[in-house]
Image 1 (cartoon, rainbow, N blue to C red):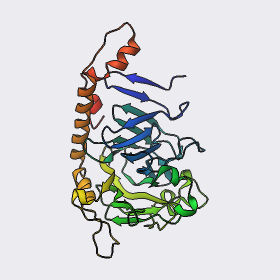
Image 2 (image 1 turned 135 degrees about the vertical axis):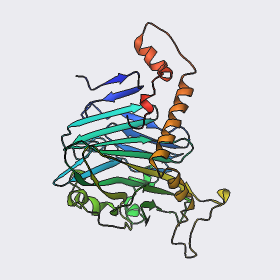
Image 3 (image 1 turned 45 degrees about the horizontal axis):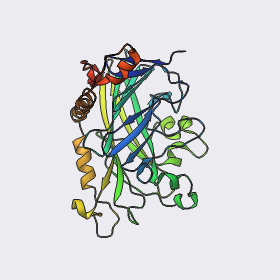
Image 4 (image 1 turned 30 degrees about the vertical axis):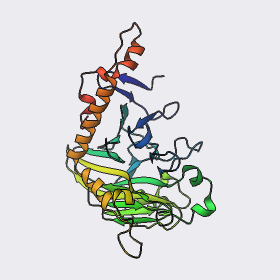
Length: 348
């Protein structure tokens, strides 16, 4: 059975079904910030150190396979689904994942809405961008809500999954506008925190996993997307998450872009930043995080960062080429020599 194919012109591997033998994973990042992303949006992210500075949680050897990721839920009236197939596993009218050089694009369509998410790590930034393009492919007006979702790791990836007696009492967050800040242990012993923001006004948010999912539910049955309304929950201990609710109305053929950014920020004397914004040491200094989000706050900025990433990989991989009788060897070695620009078109 064939699950995908190479698109040589676009320099991508194309997966046409979510049900592959195992999750097929791509690696994002080339400097200090990295992500691993599967073809169904299973993913974890880290800054510099995969063990000690893990931003998001991933569950190894769990059931179902590929548990934990960066998901987008759609509430379209009575129909609730996820554009990456997982975690809801609703049948999609169209599904496609394209793994490219330093980026992955996952597209799902159902009931007249197409949601395409481009994941990549911009050069020079300590952040991952998720550019979501939603298109009304029906012949009628569509009013719907999109819910983002990720689960924060408590920094130490090993301790995060073992020391529950302690970990279930230390989670801390802040919310400021459309940005959610994860600051567990920032007061006690860390100089870094995470931020998850979007360049749009939000109708609500959630930072507590139990509120979003429910006590006895799974992510496939998550309460908040099914109810169609965030609860504005604030995590205090337990399991901190990041979720935004964004309401939209699209006319037939109309599209809307949303730019989400998940980043890591350090406030240290070396970079001239104070840790706190208040004398009581309750509010983190968000200056660097706000500047990071501002740099990625428009569709044009995200597209420019994506184009720059394409130039980087082309220059790096086109320095060496080979000609051989083996087409597979040629494809693997010469991936940087394609003259096509379609892979780096933001609207592809």
